[in-house]
View 1 (cartoon, rainbow, N blue to C red):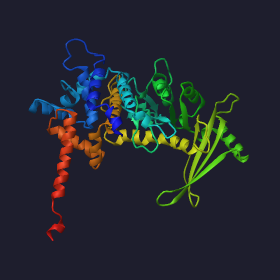
View 2: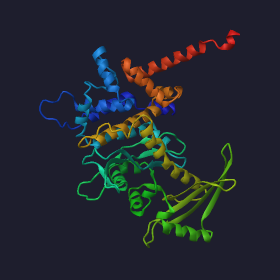
View 3: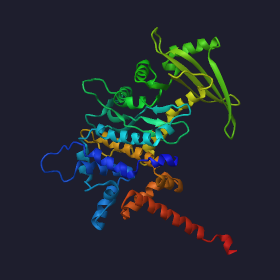
Length: 452
């Protein structure tokens, strides 16, 4: 990230201030005198747990408050009084996840102002937005009105929560920008189960305009590659590059086969050296194919990549339908953009499940919205970490110097268990200074050769 971008960067202090402003708008479900803890403190406390990636963070801060008269929940996150875990769950159960969404908009606006969004564009100026659903809760016992249900062949019923978690991605970049989610949940007035596609359509309706205005191309798997959804994207001023499988698009592939027999399918071949072997990339493409068998079918442009070894072994094959006109000069870029869809699986869903966020852990189900609002706060914590990685030079420097991301958060957990820091800057400065002293001490230790 360039110094000019950092000069316009949001700071952790900016984020905490905006957290408080947003959380103060939460509707308080309580009545009477049971109001020791505020809604703001409950939400800030929950967010602090996910941000610090420490389920025990609040327990340690309660102990620190008793022994030192201050604590890191207060100094870092602005919590006035730390509620009990049960109080947090009770208070947040009545909060709809939509109440948290303005924070995602605030951070994306900050990214735009600092130039991060433009830096996320591809070489041909595409901004890529990937859609996918991810399950974050499943049980055969715990359930509520917001659960989706599935009856198994043995008659047992499982209850689950799933969300569409859109992200901005860029080919070759190991970071993604998570956006506000849309939850797959029973809809008022509908007898049918909600589904990923319907949730994505709701997301486009409620949040799509701001991203369409940025010149955005939507990525998705084969589920999204059908005419009604594609037409919705075009009507919303989006472009699209969607996985297109032969089994679900038989008419389109009949056209491909017919045109191929007549030599009308263009092919571009590229040979690459991977460092170990040569691989051959064969790109095929053709424009203006019907997406379904009808005279008024939507016409899409189709491309395919097949990667083989020198001896002909197929290593990879995938195909895409898109709204971008394809030619010899851009087919490789179109395919690279389409393949970036996998980043929502790897850099987003997998990170949420395996890199300290515990997205699938049941932090609390509740009777109304608790499970979904906690999932939203986890996504928000991930977004704030991404912001710090892009905009906070000290945070990024620590990530570079320490051996792993897990080590960074383990060190933060350990330090904030025993020491109270006046601010986020104080914590980072302390860690950087400690790392510097450790390096100097290690460098000063005599080696075996110095003893002859």
